[in-house]
Image (cartoon, rainbow, N blue to C red; front, side):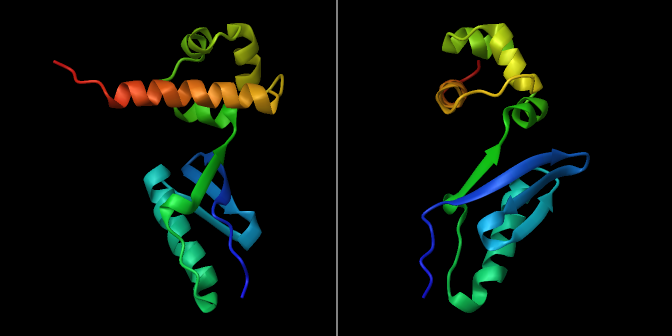
Length: 129
C-alpha cells in the first residue's frame, strides 16, 4: 500500500472566474468560485482519485500554496505597505515581491507569512462595539 503524505501541497492560482488548484502529486486539478468552493472541490476530486486505494482526504491535510502576487490580488483588504511596516520590511521591497519584479528568499517568504498570520489572529480576536 502506498504511503500518503501528512500534507498535500496544492498550487492555487486566481482566475477570472475564481480559483484553480493543482495537487500535482496525485494529478488532481479542479476549480472553485471562492476558497471555500475550492476546498470542497479539492476534497471531492482527491477522494475520487484515491477511492480505490482506500485513502480519504480531509481539509486539514491540504496545504494551499498561493504566490504573493496572487495573494495580494485576491486579499486586497490587506495593504502591502501596512504589512511591510508591521514586519519590519522595506515597503518598496515588499512591493517588488508583490509585483513579481523580485523573488523573495524562503526566509523572506516565511517572514511575510508570519506577519499575515499574526494580523489574521489579531483580527479574529477582535470584538467591534
